[in-house]
Image (cartoon, rainbow, N blue to C red; front, top):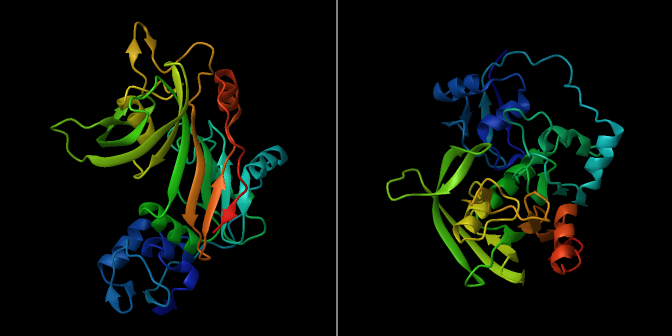
Length: 328
């Protein structure tokens, strides 16, 4: 074994150095990568680099002698026929670089304590003959439905992740809330903190002495209402904090219908639960517009999930037809 040099391909631009190394050397541990970087054995264009360094196309990476790779390719999991069909029905848009899904409520985006079935674990079913396993670009809460983007190559994943970290992505959510916001439209700006709570970690409005706070911004407008009891809101988050929309709606006195985590206890019951309506979160990622790696902006909409369609009918709310994916 000897020192070698590899060039970063155009598709690998914006990938973190540690992820790039694991892609080329699947048996490499994060601890080993950190040591290689710390001791200068891995270098980028001849210079020391940290594991989190983002690579650019054409850069040269110095590779020290590596441990032998596992023999044989990693087997690709095969889904049951029913599960494969369910997964393919989620697809709203697909090309050679991205897949856009309509995530159903109740399906976690990723694994965690006590979670055995999640979208990330099913993504081998969306290869469609491509060599790379698709990668999540962003996440939706377990109980939130709607538009979710998946990248088909590591390079595309890195580029889209960078777009989501900035403000190049326009997100539009629909929610049914308990109450009627006054004024009917506006901007919510709050500092949030993460706390341990219902079903694990959640967000809360920061107090005057809290540290490690995150500023959050959401624009909202009321699209329709049923007296003063329930309203249909359009929510446009300008930041992406944990449970941002849920805590924002609760903060203006209009918790999202079915959101027991952020509804307020009043007279022995949760204010987010209303008799006659499904006890499910009424929050849906309706539309996403983002810069496609091919150079255009892609806009994709997702139809409402069944429980929200049922509530819309009960309240007399009329949602416009779901638009087909569009490039512009």
